[in-house]
Each structure stands twice: as structure tokens, then as C-alpha cells.
Image: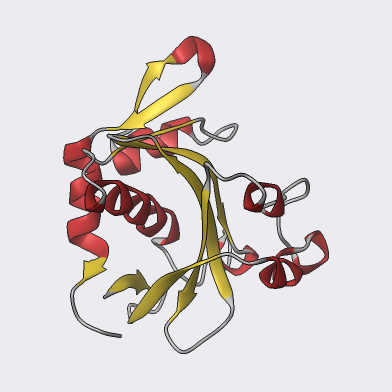
Length: 165
């Protein structure tokens, strides 16, 4: 089972999620363009958090990273980060964030939950999340947004493939 990544040239690439390991962290350093202050390694020590990397099938380069807590009916996304090559202006793959949101939702659904998502948007991205994923503020005072199950399932339908890559 694979996830579908849309390349900027229109091609579709098959990708998979794998658990992030300490050995992967050397790829995710500030010196390689990853966000300053980004530390996916801190989630590896937490037993309540599931931390994954997204890679194109047959490749080891990390395209994105997501850390979330499966809270029964929903996933609380603690961290979602695109690789430097997937940020504007070069943006190699156009749907990395949507694929990572879909994966966390599907993981919750596969374990009997409803699959909706909760997260704290990064500064300046709330409007983007509203427009692109139909995210809503469910607690503006705490700066928390949600992607309801119907919208999360739409992302799964768009980006999940039952075929092997």
C-alpha cells in the first residue's frame, strides 16, 4: 500500500511511511535546510507519540516527517514538517502536507478511531489550512485547529493507493 505524491511536473510518485529512527536524524539537520529549531528526535523518546518519515518508494531521502498521538478517535498532530526541497519556491512535491495529514488520520481509523485531526498551526499557516484542508479553529484561544473526519477521509481517498508502488 502506498501514498501518492504529486510532483511539480505533474508526475505521480508512490511513497511510503516508515517509523523514524535516530539513524535518520542526520538527514534532518539545519545545515541541510531543515527548519531552525526543528527537532524530530525529541519525539522518539516519547512512548505516546508515533513518529514517521515519508519517502518515495525505492529512495531513502526523507520528504517529510510527522509526529502524532493517536488519542483514540483522533490524532493530535504534534509536528508536521516538509523537507526543504518541498517548500516554496522549489517545492518538488506539491501535496506532502496533505499526504501526511491523511496518513495520520488513516492510522487512527485503522485502530478503530474516527480519524479526525487536531493540531496547532504554525504561525501564518492557519488561513492556508482553512482553504486547503477545510480546517477549522475549535479552540482559537489555544490556537488549536481540527480537520473533521469527512475532510480527513477525503484526503485519504485522494492520496492513498491500494496498489504497491
